[in-house]
Length: 231
Image (cartoon, rainbow, N blue to C red; front, side, top):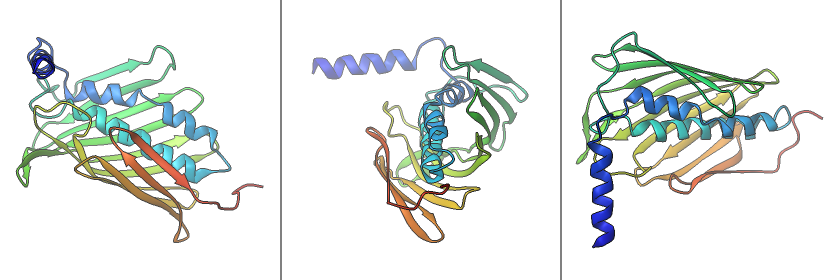
């Protein structure tokens, strides 16, 4: 009972603080978490499929962190034309987000520059509230291009939804991510409503690795044994 009361108080404090984070705030915070992109560069040029898996993990993490700025939890949205730029104090990564439209859906363009790693360019849309069964959700699709060292480029279409409830916790997004790169890899990652993660990466119609895990535990990718790309 005491633990439940404490959690309830913490939730109330977070919800009714004077300054609630906006969707742009949370998106910016997520974009600055670039550990997976740094890991992706370490797989290039020899293991581009592993780099693609890390890019998928990066965007999934962005979506999870940005979800807390969607719906009744967030503060007043930025006006059209508003722009925010933040720089990570340790990595030097710079993320800029700009609100381009507010109705009928909110459109946010974003750009990320990671020194000695690469760049991210994307567009996020936040749809109107709708019902998914008995659950209120907002569609939050992202269209993203990631350019890394060694002339590597990945493109990801994320068709995700953010649950609009007062529940805290990371399991607030679900949907699908479609991914491909300029090295012949393509993949699909499914995010279940219960937070389960699953999917594959293929090359020339052959499965070369699988995604698994849960949002609460993290995304894992298990590669299959394939010949080196550059020998």
